[in-house]
Length: 370
Image 1 (cartoon, one colour):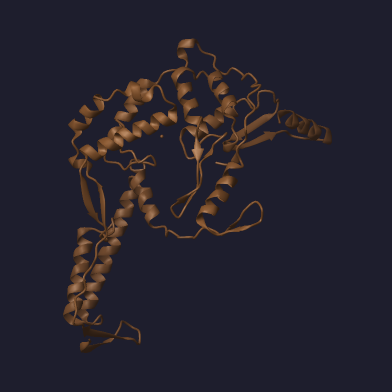
Image 2 (tube, helix red, strand yellow):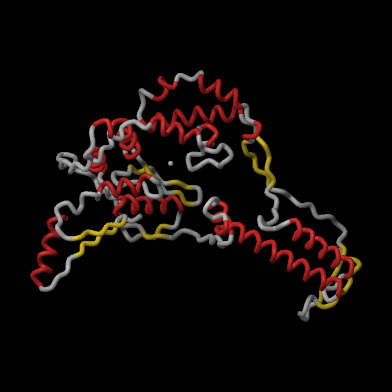
C-alpha cells in the first residue's frame, strides 16, 4: 500500500518529522452542488405579459389578507418556475474577500518554492514566506481600511465582513421541562413547549369597551395620512433585483418590510390611537390587516409546532413595530404633571421628593396610570 517513504526532516521547530509517501490510488474530490434560479437569464418580457394577463381582482379582492397573500405568492412561484431557468452552483472554497491579486501571487510563489526545496528553513523558502506573509497582512489591512472609510455609504459590506469574523456556535436545543414538570427530549414536543411559552405573553383584548383615544392630530382632513399608494409603488420600483429574497422567499424581481411590552399591545386600542394621530383610510386599513390574523410557530431541527394565533403585540424586528409602540404609549404623560422620560418600552417618571409626602404623591399618580 505504501511505497517510496522519504523523511523530510523536522517539521518547523517541532521534534516531529514530515514524511513523504506514495499511495497506489487516486483521490477523487466530491463537490456539493446546489440548484438555484438564474435570474440573469430570466424571460423578463414573458413574466410581465403573464402577470398582466392575470385577473388580480378575482384572486385578491374576495378573500382575506392571509388567503390573498397565499394566492399571490403561489402565482409568483408558478411564474418563477416557468420563466426563470435553473443553474448549478458549486460549493467551492473561495478565497477570502480581502485577498488581493498580489497576495494570491505571493502565496502561490511560496508553495512553488517549498515544493522545490522541501524545507521551510531553506533561505529561498524563508524569503518567500516573509514576502507572502507581508502581502497577506497588507491586503487585509487595505481591505479593512477601505471598508471603514466607506461605512457610511456601504454599511452592508462592513457588517457582512464583521459577521464573517464571528464564530457560529452550533448549540443543540433541549431537553426542556414542560408546564407539568415532565422532561421533553424529542423535537416535536420541544417545539410545542416553546411555542406555548412564547404565546403566554399575549393578552386577549376585551373589546366590549375601548376608551376613546386622545386626539393628537391638529391639522385639517386633507392633511391626514390616508393613501400612500404612489409612495409604496415608488419604493417597490426602487428594490434591487439582484438582492436575495427575504423570509417570504419572494425574489425582489417581482416586487418593483424588544421586550414583552411589545407583545402586549392590544390591537384595537392601538388602531384607535393610530386614527387619533391622523392616520386613516387605506394606511390604517393596511396596518390593521398587518396586525390581525398573525400566527406563529416554532421549528427545531426541521420539525415545526402547530400554529398559534398572535393575539396582541406589534411585530418585533420590523421597521413599523417600534413606531406603532411609540404611538401607543404617546399619551402616557397627558394626565401626569411630572416629567416623563420614554425610550421604547422603558418609561421613567421624574419627581424630586423632598419629604415622604412627595413620595406618596408620586406613588398615587403612578397607581392612577395603571
